[in-house]
Image (cartoon, rainbow, N blue to C red; front, top):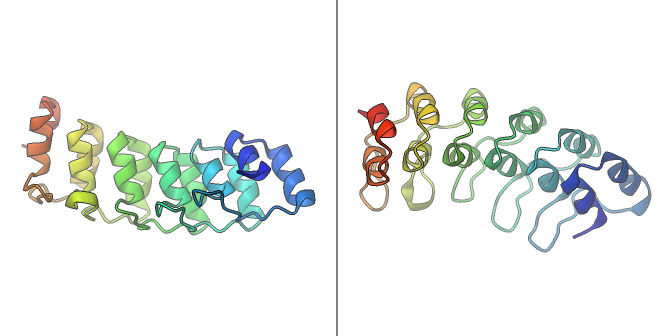
Length: 184
């Protein structure tokens, strides 16, 4: 991991500026996992660092070795401000690595992030790993607020995953009774 990756990870904009000006480290350099400084700044939601990296022409849709983009990293943490900045810079809302940013935010129950992604045009019933949708992922984790938003956006309740389970079945198996009520 480079000094630029480290500075981006902690949101140190003074170091980022100095490194970009003097060290010759590329703004799109990758660490051994394929992560860029923009990804390092996006995961914890360091907006000032993200802004600086974007102004230095960081590529917004580069994928790491797992196929994740900066938007996916930000959405997993529910950093809606960082997500908005990345979307305004042209981040692809439907980038896919077995999951989408919407699936990541839904899994973790980040309502503001889910709302932002839906407003940005995220496809609500995209199927990811094991053919699970964002609604299934929110259901298995009992995130009723996210489930309501996804349903209002038109999420299909009757889709089945690779194991033949619907969102209702997944919520029920996990004993998320309030999630079950949302689906009935």
